[in-house]
Image (cartoon, rainbow, N blue to C red; front, side, top):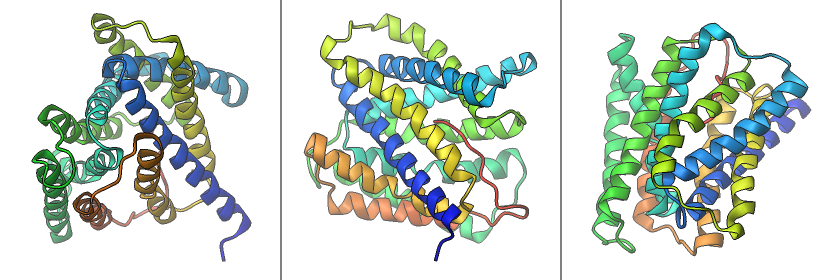
Length: 298
């Protein structure tokens, strides 16, 4: 039986995953009326304001001037990842978009061998094969319309590109590691993500309808609150437990897709998602040190 602290930590992580999955659902809804760049800008602007309030009231630490270039790089990659993901999300089912996004850890493992000289094992080669098979199954069947309505090629390409950029962001963060509080780091990522997405958002800017105001406020609130819940939960659970909880995002995506967009995941999409999850589990290497989780707001 889980201890009281671990149980509460698991509950907080589950709530965080549900909240952050809600961000995806809101981005899909807003993407029907606004450009992906505008959605990214609004999402991170509202989140930055709320995170700044959280940092001021509870963390009481502020960014270091010497880290501005690192903040900017992270913010740029976060904005690029979100822009690609939100664009793909606007043209495909939630479960499909999230399943493709889950290939991120595989790309991170591959980049680890290229950038940091980590030696890949046979399990990694097999994991890559599983991820390619899962992604290929999802893309081929939905792209051609063999399983459900077809998905346009630009949306598919954006969905495939987003986890690649995410992996690059993770590598950049590892190379520019900082000891700052995760909330401070997340705040600066949100600030720079908003700044970098602003120029493209202005090019295609559309005045948001008044009816969308609550969704714009909610997407920033869910992003900030989801991160705060995750930060609280991660301090009480192990990596292995959180990994299991994190995969529940597919369940939330399926639920939100069904409730708000009348989406019913196809058998091939679910099977492909299962292959991708298996690939991620296989590629995960046991840590040599403490059971520690690095928090990143995406």
